[in-house]
Every structure is written in structure tokens, then in C-alpha cells.
Length: 101
Image (cartoon, rainbow, N blue to C red):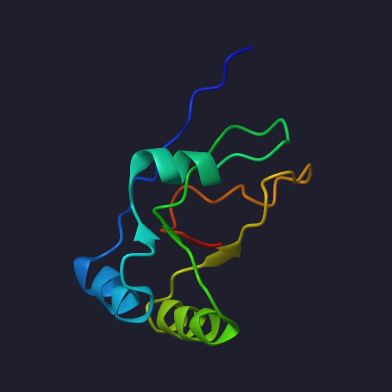
């Protein structure tokens, strides 16, 4: 059975993305390929890609990312290698979502 990826009907604001870029510079991606890759794990659930993926390099960056997301009420979902069988990467379709790698 082929499961087609779903997309989020709500998007992130340019202001929010620019604020994140002040912390991680070019290590923020909204590219479809990157988001679809990080929206799937090994579970049977349909793929639900995040709106953006952030590649943090330090705990200080993670702290700043979480603070920015909290101010904008954007959920953050940590992502490792995508092997979760519990659908940890499954996001709610009406919330814009950020994955931190």
C-alpha cells in the first residue's frame, strides 16, 4: 500500500523563519525534500512533514531555537535518525511544526 505524504495547511511566517536564521544561519531548511525526509519514521503512520527542519550544532543553539518557537507558539519535535516505531515524528496537521536535528 502506497501512502502519500501529507502537507500542513498552516505555514510559518517569514518573521519567525528570519528569527531562527539569526541563530542557525543557513542550517534551516524549508525545502520539500528535507521536510519529507524528516517527516517519516519507520512506523506505519502516513508521512506528515514538518514545515521546517533546523540543524542545531550546540545545546546553546537548541535552547535559543526552543525559546524562539515558544514565543511564536510553534511546536518543536526532536529528530534523530528516523527509526522510531512509535510515530514520534507524526505531527498534527493544523499546527506549523519545526524539527530540530
